[in-house]
Amino acid sequence: MSTSPLTQEVIGQHNEYVMQNYTRKDVVIVKGRGSWVWDANKKMYLDFFPGWAVSGIGHCHPRVVKAISEQAKKILHVPNNYYNELQGQLAMKISLNSFGGRVFFCNSGAEANEGAIKLVRAFGNPDRNEIITMEGSFHGRTLACTAATGQQKYQKGFEPLPPGFTHVPFNDKEALKQAVSDRTVAVMLELIQGEGGVRIATPEYVRYVRELCYERNMLMIVDEVQTGMGRTGKYFAYQNYGIEPDVMTLAKSLGGGVPIGALVMQNKVSGILGPGMHASTFGGNPLACAAGLAVFEAIERERLLANVETMGAYLMERLQDLKKEFPVIREVRGRGLMFGLDLITNAPKAYEFCLSNGLLINCTQGNVLRIMPALNVAKQEINQALPVLREALARC
Ligand SMILES: Cc1ncc(COP(=O)(O)O)c(C=O)c1O
Image (cartoon, rainbow, N blue to C red; front, side, top):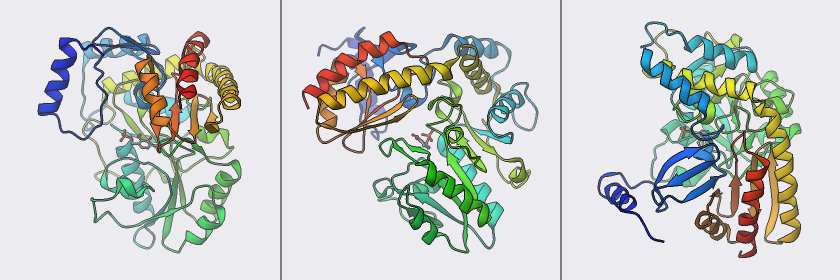
């Protein structure tokens, strides 16, 4: 691959000055619009994993760009010992589109989950402070979130981890029942494990968790950092299950590319973290809230939830066709526009082929290809991606 001077310069700078904690491909992305990005060599890519779910409504959505440009001319940051015009508006949008509770704003998924952990511990202490989470889960990289995450590979080397987390097999009612003790205060789960390989919680299991939490006066936390904001065809994945959690965490696509996270809680537990108990300097700043409001506006005005349903059904059918054609596909899992192609082998090879041929996807858990197009993806774009994916699978 010929590389431009800019590509070489950028990679050189990274190699010398940036901490080397990421495995990066030699691609310098300089521009994005909708489902497309361009690199410094002017090569175009169809992005079917936009921003690891951050750019959920596509790159540089015009409503987000306009909203943050206008806000930038007014004021960028207002500290939380004063009010800003937009924080309450965004909290209201989230509340009215979910279960009607209150919102605390922060800056990332891990921070939102930290807030959830603090909330439930403050609720249960001193008698109950243990939280049950799922094997295969991913909740972020802070120490508490690392402890909450049910995968040892993220924990190794960081001991001692904060105590108080028990991991149980996902979708296993009996294991959960056995794990609950008098010290358990909450159950925390992703309704679709994203990093864990697009594994979907069964309706039966989710109802069981909900009932058990009611019965034992425990709080149910759903981590919707990846599944929230329309990804599954509803605003929030829990809405597919006919239940309401006590606490929900959001981040990623909430800001359409601008960092923002949110901890959303039922009114009955909204008084637990009182003044001085929790805070974020940047949390809920007007720039991030302007972006969040623009994301809601785009989802509403452009009927994106309906697009997720139709495009999701269309892509699911095509992926099932591929499964019939290629025995290397063990299973196709998905909901809305969140898909996992569980391969028997060679998923990294398929990922590399897609990258070289202008299609960005993700590979997780060794052999699962994760595909999460933007909520406003067009059928034509799906039709452009499919032949590349097909060719990649043919070479597996
Ligand atoms: C389900 C889930 N929770 C939490 C996180 C952590 O979010 P962040 O990287 O913004 O801290 C992620 C990130 O991938 C996630 O997928």
